[in-house]
Image (cartoon, rainbow, N blue to C red):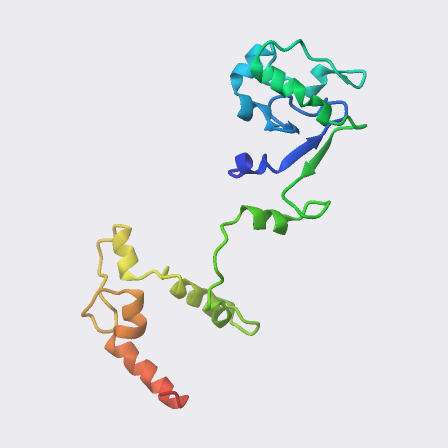
Length: 195
């Protein structure tokens, strides 16, 4: 529901009878959603209602609009021949590359595109244990519930490292800087013959 204002720009209508299409609030005209393009002054100048249906200006499969005296209405009416009248009103989702709605295509259009991270295969691989993969993902994003993050949220309790009790508990300290965790890493690296 929060994405409704974004999603409405992907829903276009092919015009038939116009009974299911809002004249001012839906995208059926070549310029887009009329109220966004021309504002409420166009509704007022057309002696119309914001909730008016498109069928109010269609009669016998022809456009029946009052004579335009204002620039916005002249522009709207000048582009009406580009709007073909079909048999029935048909919504068309323009966020997809295919003729049917595909949520992955829509997500691809909406999402913020970034470079792929180099570490994702280290976290998300076929034999990964989900809980461990999730914790690793949190660590890579620096979102672990460490003392540093608790302080930012207003926590007043103990936020020192639970292992060495000498420094603030941060992701980097827990995994790489703490004497205790360094000894554990060194032990396992020797066991794996990594130097």
